[in-house]
Each structure stands twice: as structure tokens, then as C-alpha cells.
Image (cartoon, rainbow, N blue to C red; front, top):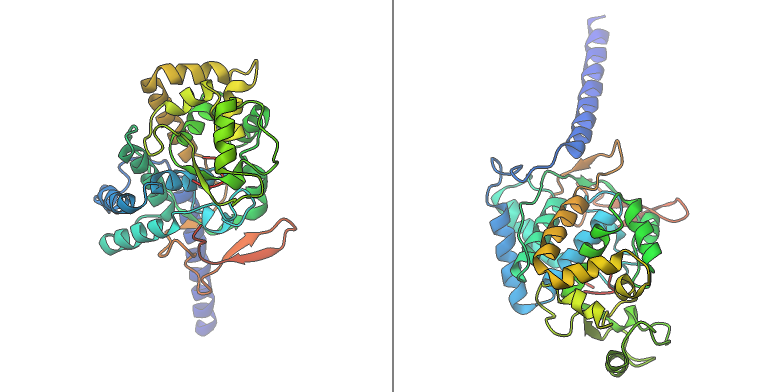
Amino acid sequence: MALLLSSSFHQLVVVVAASLMALFLISCNAQQLTPTFYSPTCPSVTNIIRQVLVNASATDPRIGASLIRLHFHDCFVNDNSATILSEKQALPNNNSLRGFEVIDLMKSRVEASCPGVVSCADILTIASEESVALAGGPSWAVPLGRLDSLTANRSLANSALPPPFFTVPQLKAAFAAVGLNTTVDLVALSGAHTFGRAQCGGFSGSGNPDPTLNATYLNTLRQLCPRNGNASVLANLDRATPNAFDSRYFSNLQTREGLLQSDQELFSTAGEDTVAIVNRFSANQTAFFQSFVASMIRMGNIAPPPGSRGEIRRNCRVVNAASTLITTTATDGSAESGLGYETTPLASSI
């Protein structure tokens, strides 16, 4: 009888422990984010990430824009919880995302200093802010305390991520779907295209000239990206200051030199409220910077679905499971496994 009671008690303890762990994971993922989250446990995390970024930028001036794009896509599929690690094969991401190795290095340096403390999602969020500041843009206190996702959803990535040929109504629908506003958030976050590059294949696929572009700029693009040419050739999103984070992006839209259709549409679509915001940001860089910071924080606070669980990954490539695999929900509802990275907010490649 005592043996039976002992066995039952042991099973009860296991069940209770498992339930408490599940509640802990859920509550952590839903907790209030704060810039001081790692102050007692990993106070040097931002300095570590900044140093890795500075070193990487010395040999790859594109890396800052690439990391912001990773962050944008990670946030846009409902959570900002490192799901981008498996959603990389979704159509808007496939063969276009880059910078994963730099995140790997940041994670390894952070783990060496503060093992098991800082999530990959927070590392990517900090790296985005540092990328903007390093390129001459604003700096801000980043809200922290996210967990890394245990799953990813490729079909949702395909439907949620706005491609570079979207019209303004389509862009607004995509932003509204994740809880971002369709005016200032849309225009300010699109302003991240003030630096970085895009592959020719991301904006020259149809072969038809974009009627919103001025003729001189169109001829320049035709020479750089001829029809049936090399789709991987890179074009600067901003011809004048391609590596600087400034308000030149909006001036380019005013002169009809927006590289991506989804960018130029913000200014060239008659009657849209985005036109006035483009004009304001072009005339006042401080206003753009202030709005960009507020929009980045809002985007970084997009919450995961209710009841979602998470963890602190030891390796940003994989979940902390014995199989080292992430289960990815495919379009047909079947489970797929996503392992590792490919080495390749809205361009085909930045």
C-alpha cells in the first residue's frame, strides 16, 4: 500500500512540475518587456552585440540593413520570437535573407558571458537598434524580455510578409493585420530602406517599366539590371547615401527614385494619406527619427499568440530539443523540419 501511495505521489509531483513549467513559459512569454530586463543577469549584453556588429560592418557595410530586415520579418509573423530561423524558406524570405552568421556570433559571445540568459529574439532586436545607430540613425532603449519560439509557420509567413510589389492598400492591410497602424508606422518603418541593397530580381521581374519612376532613374536601372540579366546583382536602395541611415529615402520618393514599387507607391499613389507623411519626413529628419523609434518599439512589441510557449535557445539555429529540429507548419498543414540557416523591412535582399 505504501509503495502504491509513493508511486502515485511521485506521478503527481511530476504532473504538477510539468504544469508549473508550462505556466512559467507562458507567463514569461507574455510578461511586460523592459529595457532593464538583463541588468541583473547580463548587463554587458548590448556592448557585446555592438562590438560584434562594429567588427562585421568593417568588412560588410550591408550587414546593418540586413539585420533590420531579419528583425522586421521576425516581428511580422505574429511574434518577434526568432521564428525567422525556420521561416527563412517562406516565399518573401527565400534566397534573400542574410546576416544569420553574425547573429550566431553574437549569440556565442553572449553565451560565453551570460550562459542561458539572453534569447535569440532579444539579440536580434538589440542588433537592429545598434545597426540603426551605427549608420548614423537614432538610438533608443530597447524593451527586452522575449523568449524564443518553439515553432515556426511557413504558410503564415507567405501570407503575412509584404512583398516588394504591394500597393498601398495591400501594405496597409498587411500592417493592420499585425496591429501596426497604417499611416505613420507604415511610412516610418518603410524608411528603413534608406540604406542597404536589393537584388535586381526583386524589382525587375516583369520586364515592364514602372510608370511611377522618372525616366533618368529608370534608364539607370535598366543598365544595371537588364531584362534576363543576372537577378542577383545588387542595387542601392538609396543612390546618394547607401550606407547611411537618414531621411534621404523620402527625398528619393519625391523625385520618383524609389527602387521598390512598394516604396514608391507611398508617394505616387494619388489621394493616399501616406503622401503627406513622406513629405513631412523628407523635410524634417528629426520627425522621421522620432517616428521610426516609436514604430520600431511597437513592432518589437507585437505579441505572440495567446498560450504560446518559448525558451532561451542555446543555439539560435535550433530549439533546445534532443532532435535539434524545429517543426514548421507547411501550407497543407503537414509538419516539416527546418534546420539551420541559409547564407543568403521589404526588399528582395538587403
